[in-house]
Length: 266
Image (cartoon, rainbow, N blue to C red; front, side, top):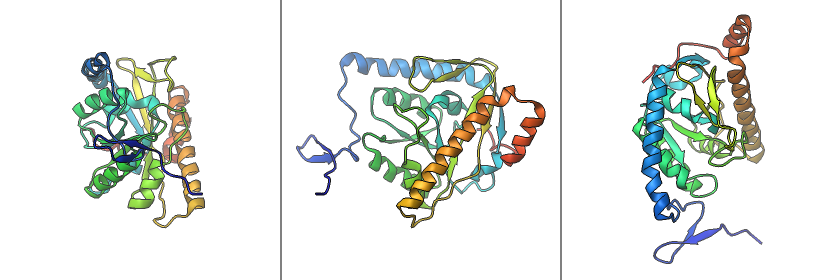
């Protein structure tokens, strides 16, 4: 017997597949009031700390638009480094897959003020509709991005969305991680979220791109998903150990990741 996709009922009584349902959840009046307040405070914090950070990029040549401004990529990164990533990638018109839950609603207010665009959906709700929108934005020349273990984990386990989108569109997957020399780690959060301390040094590690064939079968898709998972883990391990490494080891890693001038800061 074939499985039937779970669905919910729309306002007109029609059934909507949960994979295409991007309606926001019902929230209490108190929660709705919190959304703009949290969004304003989070934006102010990023705006305050972001300009003080000192970035180095390892593997900058792996970002397609560093060589060809018309070549977009599918970007994937761990939820843990959203704060620093929001500042580093600002004002580039990147389209981010954004959940419609409470956290997603205030996060959307923050990132859109930093020049990002959003496609609504997540791995648990509205994801296929979000992928359709992201495919359209790639065709328009925009980079798209996934917080790949979001919106609620498990931590450091990559979802399959980028691999599916890469097969559909032919655009490569770019993974990265940002390591911080000095940061506050929120130990009670599921993602061990990091807030950089003012004037911290930061390193953006970008491994080589991952290509997915347009007619990839299930076995190939699984292999590419594993490749993406491994690249994310490698970028994280290098970035988070960077400031404890000896200079000669840093230099070796710059060569490994084909370090080049970073994409121009916005």
